[in-house]
Figure (cartoon, helix red, strand yellow):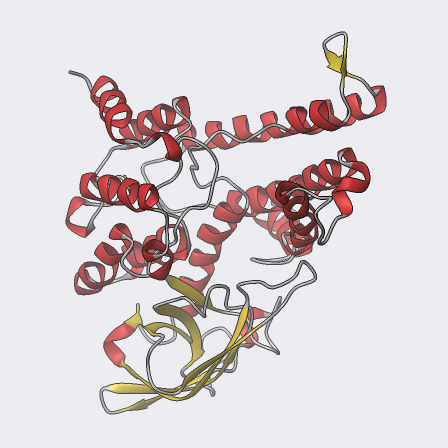
Length: 387
């Protein structure tokens, strides 16, 4: 039996029906423990086969699939609308970075628990004085024997209250230049000296947090790459993050089209959306969505043997997030007054979620690098324009 036939048969036999539609995906750790039974079972089955991270080496919990095999797996998952078994910073950000920059010992320690969903990760990048100017991070890590002593705070550490581990940019050499004094380190969120406060957004309660480190002791072996090379590791991880935020990281599930919402709220006449102005807007968004997904697929198929992202990650992040804002604004507009509910029985859960989701998208073009920063990178690194 060929790989496609074997994959199709296995998915049909092992993917629960409830996992063949959109819904929440666990990101590791406590989110797996609290997930519905079918979601936990789906994760377990996929992890046993190595398909939570299909292209990672088998010795690190992956499936060891080639690029062609991974493409087939993605196609077969889309065919049955199979939900991703796991998501989050572990599989899309720190895992790939460790694969590229970590030692063999670090790969064996950190990667299998990510693949199995055992632990959840959060990100320690931004600080109160280091947002778009990320190289201005001031969280200090001072050598003390076999450990680093870490002091400072991180802002917008999404998921920190549920995370088991964090990856951080820290300043290990205050006398070096701004970029060369930074190192990349990971550590356990249960370490003494860590405290967390929640941050609410305009859309309501969120998973964003501020994380404080007060004399947190971290073994030096948790440093990824060499001291002072954190900016290089951090930039690469940002490329992985931007690819993921832009929706170009290889998600398999079909996306519900805006056309369905238009038909539900505007109505249909002669097989077409009743209002011609909305029909035009829906068509434009749908065409742009289709063109973007085709670009994502083409880029993946044209990729070299290198698994590392390129500066195209900035294009994906820019276009994907701007397009997502347009899509959600149209969705709320299609709903009319039903798209502006905050509480109340007169709104369905989906309508209330759409309102909060629309507000949440306002952060899409800021997090992971603003659209303005992405435009600069595209101009310099992709188009080759002068500084």
